[in-house]
Image (tube, rainbow, N blue to C red):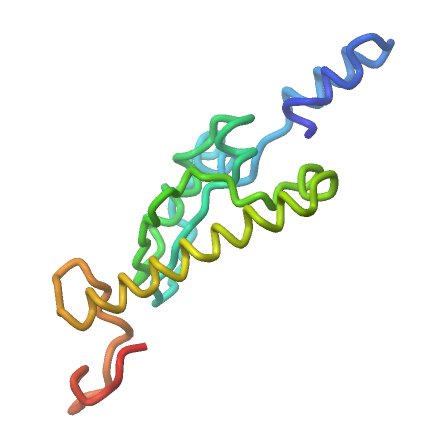
Length: 151
C-alpha cells in the first residue's frame, strides 16, 4: 500500500510530496534484506518439505519474486517444492478478500485442492524413492527409512 498506492492516494493533495517520499523509502521485507542490505543467508534451518506461494501483491504490484526465494534457498535442510499453477492467485489478499468474500473463499478452496494434489504427488514420489523426492528428517543410528511409514 505505502510503496505503490500512497502517491496515488494523495495525488491531488498538498501531501503528495510526503507520500512520494514515504513510498521511495518503503520496502517489502525480503526485498530489503536481499536487494538493499545484500543479506541472503540468515542462518536458518528448517528440516521439512515446504511449498511457497508468491504473494500476488509482491508479484504483480511490486514485481518481487526472487528475494523470498533467495532467502529460502539458503535455509539449511529445507526442500522447496514448486506447486503447479504457483502464480494463480489464492484470493486471500486484504481488500479483495474483504470486498469479495465469496470469490475469495472459492479461490482459496481451489488453491487448497492444488496443495492437496501436490502433497499426494510428493508422497507417491517418496514411495517410488525417486532422487528428487525429499528424503525426510535424518534417522537415528541403526534405523532405516524402510522401518517407518511415509510422513
